[in-house]
Image 1: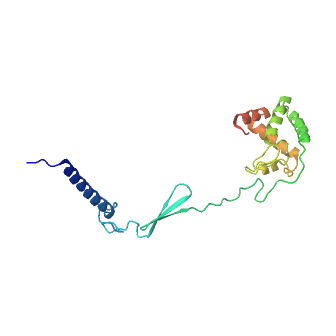
Image 2: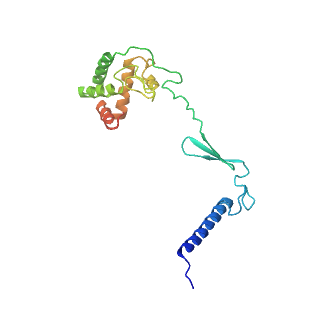
Image 3: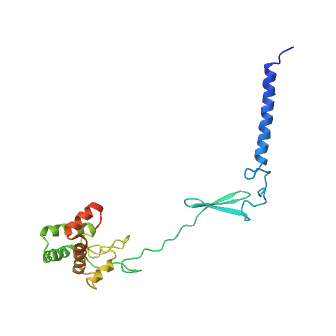
Length: 202
């Protein structure tokens, strides 16, 4: 009896492999991967995979959403949210007054106010450094991002009204309020300056 040729064995194996691959390909395209039955728009149990809707929406983390229908899908960019304008220190529409700052006169007043509180001259040095950093000793210094205002950068600036109705334009009013704040929260200007150096604010 003759042995089969190796070439014929290989050819037969190739035919069997090709047939198996073709059948597998057809089955993958015909069988519904969600229900295990023949592909259709509903599950075997009669339930609609979209819950009765023709389109199912998916929220994607970020700026996009995906709407999936039976026939395909659409990707859309989410509309951008509009943020309400930030409130200012004295209410909506408030803007710093048009005044000419005089840092030298402000510092001269502060030196007397520090001495009147019985603090050493070194405390005045700390105060100068602190408010140089905060506002440059400008009476109308305004931080549009936070709403802080004035020489001591009160937040909001309208807090300084407790020291006088002219808090927007009067350096002395702002300084008196600022020294009261420093004293109540940090004890002395050097205490406030140390805190500012540590964390970046006071």
